[in-house]
Length: 141
Image 1 (cartoon, rainbow, N blue to C red):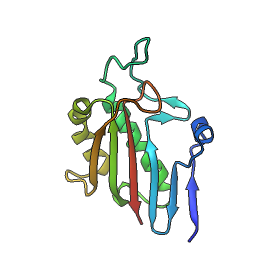
Image 2 (cartoon, rainbow, N blue to C red):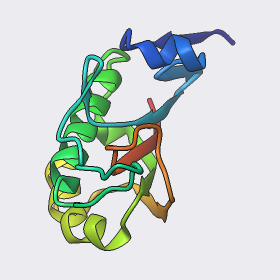
Image 3 (cartoon, helix red, strand yellow):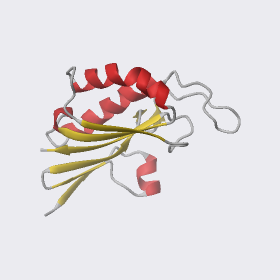
């Protein structure tokens, strides 16, 4: 069975060495997605001199953009967020994420009861210091 990979063409793909998404058979595996437009982070959180986030209010904007980028990747395979069966949200602050996750996720999936298995995990750090959230997805087509 062959694999089909998709990329955004951002520097960190080649620096780290990975694909944004890989389709293998009827399953699409998406690497952790974040809120970027090209190589620019959208709604970067402010950080102090040691790289610690000082304000989590950009969580909603980062989460919304992350779902938009995910929808773009899925579209390349002829899929949508309706095809997502599992998501894992990695966040720096669980309280900030829970405060916005319900409305953001419902809007992204287009329904009050998203039909997706979902896990949220707190982590001390993500790829970029200004990043508050990263979401990994699995979709079936």
